Amino acid sequence: MPLIEPLVTRTSTSMADARTRAIHLYRLWQKNVPQIMIDYHLCMPQAVVRAKIREEFEKRRYVSDPRTIDVLLFKGRIEFEETYNVWKQYSHVLRYFDSNEADPQPDKFLDKFIEGRA
Image 1 (tube, helix red, strand yellow):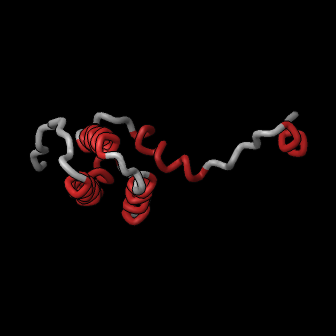
Image 2 (cartoon, rainbow, N blue to C red; image 1 turned 90 degrees about the vertical axis):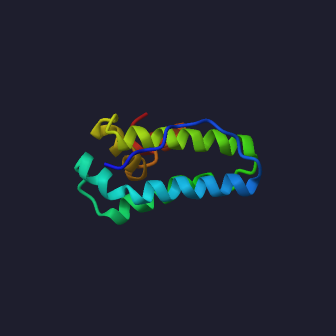
């Protein structure tokens, strides 16, 4: 098991620095996908896990405030450590993949009525 660097809170000096740190965190996640799959006994292809990681990073691609990026990087690093050190349960990891599979719930009364639930 490789040694994980201690988590240090630091601020980005520029957007370029924040981008470099985000790419580093992304690569850290991608590099450790095989070990995460072994630890959590995930029965899905690596490509699915890698795509989900990319999707999570892409959600926040257009954040432009360096302070917000620093907070997101800190949270992403915490999430990585919890996953890598197997501090999460199997169900916590699967929760990321279930969000895509869920059917959209009707919000309006008429949608529920048509479905027969009202």
